[in-house]
Every structure is written in C-alpha cells, then in structure tokens.
Image (tube, rainbow, N blue to C red; front, side):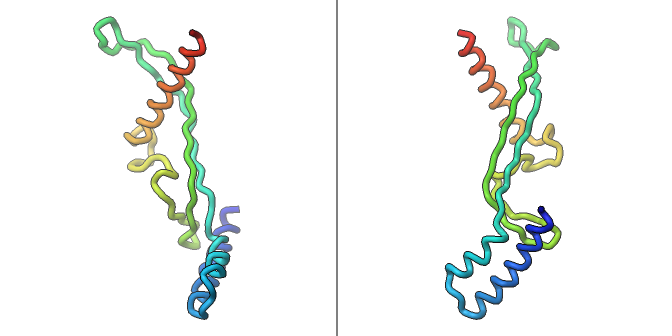
Length: 126
C-alpha cells in the first residue's frame, strides 16, 4: 500500500506541476494533490516501571508495572519516490533518538500517561 501511495504521489506531483504551468484553478490543483496526502498515526504500547520510594522519598528497588498506550495522529505528504514523508512534529514520537528509551520527550509522554492510569485506577477503587 505504501508503494502504491508513493507512486500515486509521484503521479500527483507531475500532474500538479503541469496543472500549475497550464493555469488550472486552485481547486483542481488541490484535487490533484489529494493523492499525495496521507494519515500519519503513531502508537507506543509500553510497560512502565514505577519505583516505590521509602519513607524519606529515596528510590528503592521495589516497583510495580503500569501498562500504557500513547498515540498521536495527523497528516503528512510524500516527498520522494523512496516513500519519505513530511509531517508535523506532533504526529510522531522519538523526536531526537531512534530508541524510545533515550528520547526525553517520548519518555515524558509515557510517564505522564502512566500516572494518569494510576490516578484513574485509584479513583475507581475509591
């Protein structure tokens, strides 16, 4: 599907260039470019270890695990035959590293979601 969409993107790019030079309307150009647009959806499922501190708030080796899932979506468009996509930063995870355990912003989102899960579970138990 990705390859088919990438090929559609190249056709749309060619048509767009021709449409722009031949004086097509903005509506026609937008319609031709629609084939290059795609939905970008990212999801991370993780088990987060929450370490339980002692009475002095010193970290211990005791922990419990919280299962979390964070996702995001937005739009993007193909920019090359190889399938490269341009999208906005809010549509993806791992902004600075290939490994999610090294990316601070992704870690923050996972930790934030794990605490939301803990609070929700605590509230449901009363």
